Image 1 (cartoon, rainbow, N blue to C red):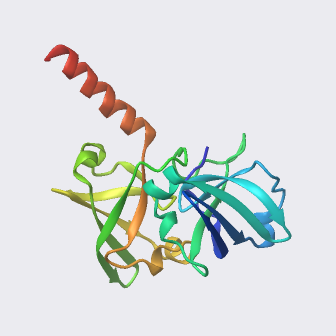
Image 2: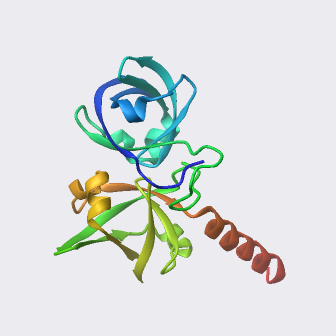
Length: 203
């Protein structure tokens, strides 16, 4: 489980590509590296990955074809920075909202608007996922727990404070970039339950 409170970013130092498979190696600083063991779960841009190797500050992760197809991790290059969150532990403060690290889809940025103390980003929603997007609902944006602002037709926005811009890689994003989206699990469950109920009642 994750909380959507990104703990920092880490550079991708090597990508080993094989058929329908990739190994990503990132470099973690001491606070993020502390206590890591093989098998640990760490979110990259909100996507839960498993530690498969540790060599000093360099930590390896294997990505299957499904992960590469659904997420923006396939867009990464050596030198790219990813948002990092270690898995939550029992007793940790849940400062964001409960997240699984399972990316549902990616959304393209269509507009970035900076003001003095705020940044507003608009995203294009793939049609089949519009039903999960509600104003004031929770959403995971590249692993960042955020609240949805406005929703218009097939787009929505979020508002980012300076702290979020400093702590994550979202400040480097621009129109056209693909962003990992995780819908709040409770929202998804409620919507799908209501859909099933209505389908059974009014076939």
